[in-house]
Amino acid sequence: MQIYLPIAEVSVNAFLLFGLGGMVGILSGMFGVGGGFLMTPLLFFIGIPPAVAVATEANQIVASSFSGVLAHFRRKTVDLRMGTVLLIGGLTGAALGVVVFNYLKSLGQVDLLVKLCYVVFLGIIGSLMFIESLNALRKSRRADASPPKRRQRGWIHAMPFKMRFRTSGLYISVIPPLVVGLFVGVLSAIMGVGGGFIMVPAMIYLLGMPTKVVVGTSLFQIIFVTAFTTMLHATTNYTVDVVLAVLLLVGGVVGAQIGTVIGARMPAEQLRVLLAALVLVVCSKLALDLLLQPSELFSLGDGGGH
Amino acid sequence: MYRLIAAFCLICLPAFASEEQVVLGLSQDRVAITANFDGSEILIFGAVKREAPIPAGPPLEVIVSVVGPSKPVTVRRKEKKFGIWVNVDSVLVDSAPSFYAVATSAPFDDIITDTEDLRYRISIERAIRSVGAAMHIRGAQEFADAVIRIREAEDLYSIRENTVAVDQQTLFRTSIEMPADLTEGDYVARIFLTRGGEVVSQLETTIDVRKVGLERFLYNMSREQPIWYGLMSLVIAIAAGWGASTAFRMLREN
Image (cartoon, rainbow over all chains, first blue to last red):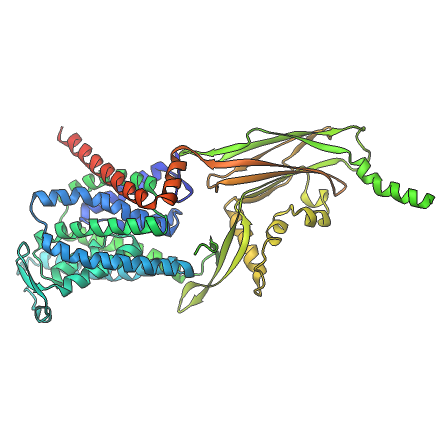
């Protein structure tokens, strides 16, 4: 069944979109990630214009994170204070990101920027995760169950503007969370991702937040930042395709529920190796597109639209 | 004096002999882009009206072209820089049709001369080349060729020879397929009658291609009230996501 997308102005198969949404949903349920970093490149591959893919994906992330954050609120695993600080950074970052995005769009380099960001971040995160989870696998085989030592975070404690975060049990400067939020906001606007895959490790290793509040707090921040990004793209680029978002979403939500069930039955270390491998596959596909000579050296874009 | 009259007759003769006019019919004069739009086929048919008997000489041939709305297009070229392929330079083609289909009753070069093609801008190359005013950059032709090549690969530009059926030099018909990825606007259908490579008659009509219903509503709203459109997208997406997850959970619990 073909569906004509009103904003993307392309006709795509609705079942293909359901399928993509479902597949990414299963993966995101299994691994507990948002899935934006997989969905956006997949949308490029099926021929959705990158600007529309990025903006629409932001819209979809708002919706798919919404039911997640409700569950975390019920369990009281959201650090509202930390979330708000991250959010202030995030909103500033998203505004910056959209400005950069629009500037590069006028130069005709936005596709390159988006793809480069993907290659760099997916490459780094994928490799780190792969190495770390392989080590964890080896350790669990040796049954060496000594807990890792908590690292010293001297330089973070030395910063000014300290604030007490009760839910996280932290007394730290607001500068590191602001910077983390800012950074993730920029990525959200440019890459069409929630940024959970960057924020979660940053919150655990950099800020030293307890693991149980990390996911809820990052979801809280992601919802507001991606909602803001959606609004910015909708008002400056007119690239949010609500039909596309809803189709992806329905598949995604159902897939996520199935994925959660599968994920609960698999050992955590093996899951992480799988996820890392997946991230690296997407990364290398995008990298190959940039490195190999394309079959068509010319590309067409809107003329004089700025 | 006689010479003058003879010359006058000679000049008038072709015009006199081409007292042939197109009478046209379309299966539809508007295309509605609905939510499940996946392309359209337009039947273009007609007859040749003439007062005199069919002239002797080369047979009547028919060329039908359908042209979509023109828009400026930025053509960018990639080059290898620092090991990766990046866009290095661009040319703005002032206007290039978003859709261009030509259907003919015989091989194109056999039924129309180059001069006539140049005058009426019928073939794809002529139609594109005539519009590029900003083509002063060296190698700009490469960029224009790229527009044609890319759009031909996407089935947006096509020349379909021998697809117009002509009966008794009087009736003709053809069908033009339009792909699913159409831009909306006024599409112009032009019909040319040729004899011995010369155009003897032509006719133009428009086909209205429009988004309708939901497509129209969403598109207009996103351009005219972007803030409300953005908010609506968020609300719809949240409701759909929350609804789907609640429905699925209830299904599993039962």
